[in-house]
Image (cartoon, rainbow, N blue to C red; front, side):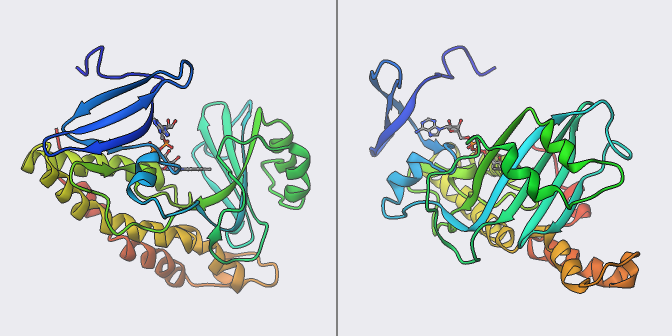
Length: 300
Ligand SMILES: Cc1cc2nc3c(=O)[nH]c(=O)nc-3n(C[C@H](O)[C@H](O)[C@H](O)COP(=O)(O)OP(=O)(O)OC[C@H]3O[C@@H](n4cnc5c(N)ncnc54)[C@H](O)[C@@H]3O)c2cc1C
């Protein structure tokens, strides 16, 4: 059991100081402005892509990075799910326009439309853009009107969406180090990445597994944090870089580039082996294998 007093809500971290035997952390209550200081053996910064802990560790890093892609996303209630009710749709080319649709439960579809707004090239994000900025249906409708499917009306999907968010797809360069003595980073604070491939939150969960493994071996100590850094940072660096190349969705790029004319069958433009190779290339880069995963021992 975590215990009543372990989680304190409404506390914004603003500063920390490392001492030989502990860390002191200052929090402000954004409503009252009251500042209080806590002490702990270690500090794990899990404060997302705009992490304060990361900024305090790397004060010269600057804003998030952007490659010219904007995203709209929404959730649309539906009476019936499409096809078998468990199919994810990827349409288009992640390099310039891609629509993704998938069910989130029995009666709601999640959709996301990624559009190239400016030419490719990684640069500092021009505006502050977060995933909960509100977007407008009028802006999205013309962008999906020619994306036709026999079993989903894509315009209706956008029109009936309960809420639409609009934001820039951003990340940060991989860091040379996460753990600094008694302080470390986890999740998006450590490795924000493009959502291509749906890896961000999954990697955050695997980070916590890495932390537990390291703590078991070295205790809740700076050495444990160092071990966690060595275990997790190299892999997550590969994920950040692969996401910049569209992750597993580069299969769409491959098909789009091969098919300048309309085609009836996927086999008209690529053999199953060629398609498999595009995906296998991604799996190799991230060192993924179903067999390896299924044979990892449980932690608990
Ligand atoms: C459109 C989109 C689609 C995605 N799809 C997927 C997907 O399919 N699969 C997947 O695995 N991932 C996906 N992701 C990525 C996923 O959402 C993130 O990787 C994940 O939320 C990161 O979790 P986190 O806990 O590290 O950070 P966050 O979820 O960002 O949480 C950070 C928390 O820290 C708090 N905080 C910030 N600053 C402070 C402070 N100074 N003091 C105290 N608290 C603070 C914030 O309020 C927030 O609650 C997607 C992301 C986007 C934008």
